[in-house]
Amino acid sequence: MLILGRRDVKAVLDGADGAVLRTVRDTYVAHARGETSVPHSVFLRFPDDDRNRIIGLPAYVGGARPVAAMKWIASFPGNIGHGLERASAAILLNRVDDGRPVALVEGSVISARRTAASAAVAAEELTVGAPDDVRTGVTLIGCGVINAEVLRFLRAKLPAVADVALFDLDAGRARAFADRIRRPDLRVEVHERIDTALAAHRIVSLATTAGTPHLTTAACRPGTVVLHLSLRDLAPESILVATNVVDDADHVCRAATSCELAEQRSGGRDFIAAELGAVLARRATVPYDPHAVTVFSPFGLGILDAAVAAHVLDTAASRGLGTHLPDFLTD
Ligand SMILES: NC(=O)c1ccc[n+]([C@@H]2O[C@H](COP(=O)([O-])OP(=O)(O)OC[C@H]3O[C@@H](n4cnc5c(N)ncnc54)[C@H](O)[C@@H]3O)[C@@H](O)[C@H]2O)c1
Image 1: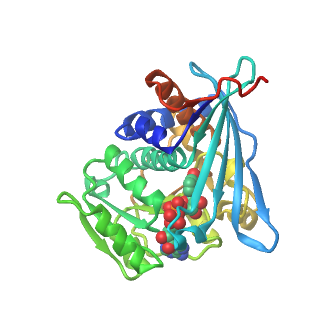
Image 2: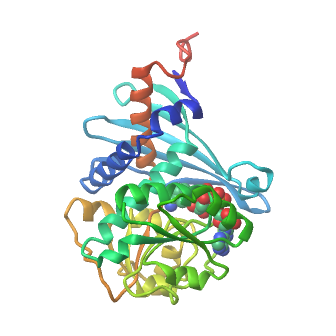
């Protein structure tokens, strides 16, 4: 058993955003080709507590580097008030020939980066054919860990992004975020109102901790691509009038997401235009529509964590990183 802590994971992934982007893209394509197995996530909740949760995401990815894994990720939004990150996670990896567990890997860095990479891959794909100025700015709603990663991955994919609009319910967090990301090649504006932030740019990333819809896309300009990473912000009416792309329809129409509310409201899933993997594999097309709002809702598939964790494991092992427990499975 190899144990890889956060420092080991960062030693592999810092400066390796390109590898994460490629892994995420390839994994979506593998999913579209039926080379994956992704049972539904399990949500552990606590009595009289609708805020905190721990989610288990089992996953198998086939292909050249097959991997089976389980991500076990806790979300405690109140942590940020105590100087801790909201999310903490561990990923357990198993070999696929004999099933034996081989590595325990710190999971929150992998989780945040695969999420941001999926947003960046979607933003690039869904703005193909858009006017150039669509790819020059981004609005970030929710100024936490995920949107910080989104900004970096987005700029790796769309290097013309030079304007950033920020909004957070907690204005202090928006200002602190602005201070952290400010650099000479980036113009950053903190908005006091969410509607002016939504109208500022035609790429919008939602990464809040809202549990129920609080937002419509009425303030978005036509041609806006919304990366709905936090899944529960948008009113179902906004989902139903948008062009919707998801990572997996069966997964995303669960757990009180805006997509599940839209399914309940409309009685079906006809509002979903395509899954991202199918678009990337050229099995479906979702042309950029300058007159409509496009919403990407990724449930966040465990296959992304499994594939990125396998990359981390292989690279760390080749560099001699981590702590070995050779007798983990024997006495
Ligand atoms: N879809 C996926 O694959 C995926 C993966 C990881 C995380 N997420 C989701 O991303 C979200 C953000 O995660 P994080 O780690 O950045 O959290 P975080 O706690 O670090 O940051 C969230 C921020 O959102 C702000 N916020 C809360 N409600 C808001 C509202 N109504 N309007 C504006 N701002 C609001 C908070 O003040 C906070 O600054 C979470 O909901 C998480 O579940 C999704």
